[in-house]
Image (cartoon, rainbow, N blue to C red; front, side):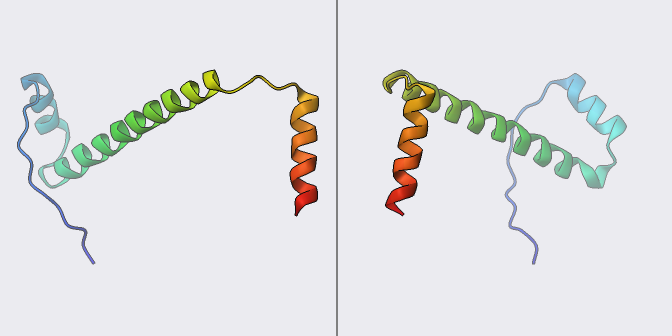
Length: 79
């Protein structure tokens, strides 16, 4: 089954449009743009998650290796 699509209206630089029309066949342009947006959105998500993890890291205490091993072993014993 084909995935639903939406038509969006946005602006791109003229130079980008010329290259897109020059190098990408007409039937493949939407797919190329969609794939590029998917990659950029993944980067935005990764950056947002990294910021959240860094904020959590700054709030949590620093543990030694021994403390981490002890906590893991304790969790394993609980089942």
